[in-house]
Image 1 (cartoon, rainbow, N blue to C red):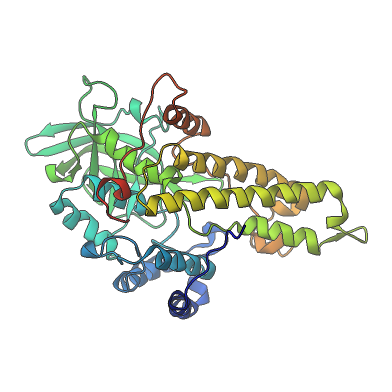
Image 2: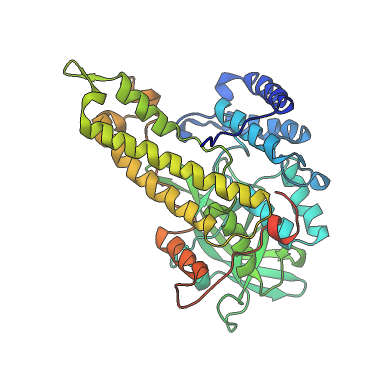
Length: 405
């Protein structure tokens, strides 16, 4: 069976156009292997470059053209994604700025005025936004959200603390996420979803200096005032808006042509490395572990491809997106141990160490989005009908309004 997509001549010509543009990027501005090597100069260079990219329709290629997106086909979007990843082009001034999730929420839940106010500056490359979801006391359990939003005339007053807000650079233009609007309402009907301008009085964003870098942040909101039109959806619909964000983040949009560079490097390492005068591939245990990593990566590719196809065909999903996310996290962790077991202590070396295999690219990070896999498994159980409660997938631009994003 041929799982490869075969592009048309017209699509191949489009790829050549994108590749010429990517190849013209200065080497010093390409995404580094280790995100800690990214500089402020790179950040601001890409903030400006993304305005040019947006004008070409390549920054958010599948988003609606009427709001500043590219309005391009699925195939063109996939080509851009492939070429950008090949050439080290960051999508939105860094991979840790999850604006795509917000775009989905704005397309589904935003009013026309809100789309013009918030969505257009994002799609044209002017603004970036960070997602504030996690609270210190409850982690990813948004049903236990404690940060409050209280009406004050036409405005809202926000108070709360968030942690592990991902983002590169000094600060975003916006924070987005839920706040508790009605403590007396039932769970899942007591939240609002807000756009918070940065900077604004009473808001402090502070870096969390962690082992892997400083691209996670605390957010402290102390009587932060935001206008009423910064509420996306109704004042009791925040849980539903968050659901649209999480459908995407859990894996509900997929990836057309998923490629695992770490696994590719592992296969090359096993083929090319000798120990005690013999090829490492001659060891049956090494072959077995490498084959396991390779098969896991291809299973992930198939799961991504199926979900990507369903999204673009506007098919309603049930468990598929969450299953994609669960496997992504599980196999990433398994391959972390496989890589380190086969490469040995060298796998722990950073990009500045000359003995690091593949320039340090073998350092595998464990991927956890929107909480632990237990949350993902609970979602799957509910959607296939084996839990005490049942649920349907949240609306996305593909299923709610017939718009791509």
